[in-house]
Image 1 (cartoon, one colour):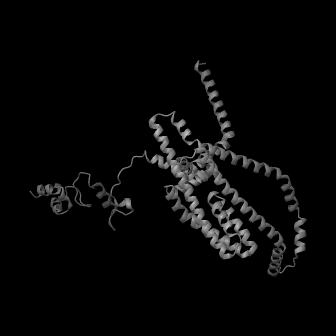
Image 2 (cartoon, rainbow, N blue to C red; image 1 turned 180 degrees about the horizontal axis):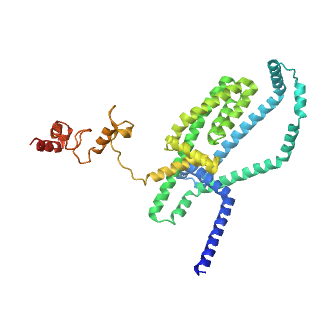
Image 3 (cartoon, rainbow, N blue to C red; image 1 turned 90 degrees about the vertical axis):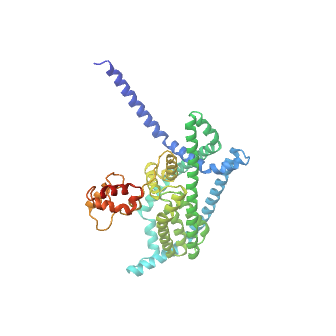
Length: 413
């Protein structure tokens, strides 16, 4: 046995053990890493406001606390207002449920020639097996729901704490990071940090603007239909549809439909149709233009980054994909060398040949294009075939540099 084989086997086993240990640690810490990533982008979003307040003499920690306090008050106030509205509507719906059930049963009897009654329907629902199983599963799932709620609150608290530390100690964090890098790298890191702040702020600005437009549009519809609580519902639709990726549109549209149903069932259909039409307008017209302008990326790149972020990290990835890609694109753009584009018709989407021109003529003209050194004067004439034709080109643009005139003089002699 070679002497190096045992050492190679030990080294391979050690590398495999390290790989397995690293994979296990990454799987255990993936939740914390995602929370830290969300906190970092949240800190970047509030960085401009904190820096502006700090520049006026306020301590950075106090400025960060005031910004978070304002966001918290706005969020809690909105949740309380929406919760009270929803509770009142649920009570009204429960009181009016027998009337709705009677109208539905009468419509079924008239349409299908049946003889149903509300008492029979209620008895069949109350004594059905699926309802009893649902109640049992709901009773056993109360603990799971409580655990999920507590876990979500703990995660939210973790994100806010990390965001507060990142925003309050931003200069200290940048100083600590730059202290282990050479001066040239320090400038690059600081520039990348500044770009990330600008792009994240631009992304939130675009989302806020789309939320405002969506809220106004849905508010107008709800007022026309006479749906109660139109302002709160409009704010709900604007915020939820823009800041909850993928399923936010459906969550946002479900509540106005439910409230509109209590006024008139046909109003719920109108709200559903408007939500679908507006969503298509937003996806194909409004969102690509606003997102591409505020974060300076192509609409196709923005759409692809959202899909990739969703595939990698779910809803969180979809939320932070666009500012992350915009930051990376802007940072790499400073290190990509660019050249002047040649003035070719094909660059502008136009063909460089006349209609009816043969493929062979196009190839011969491309080979004899300026810069090939063959002195060809026309697209279909090989070099040196006819001196008289070349001399005739002295009246054209070729005589401007003197080469055409010299060639023509030599041919005439």
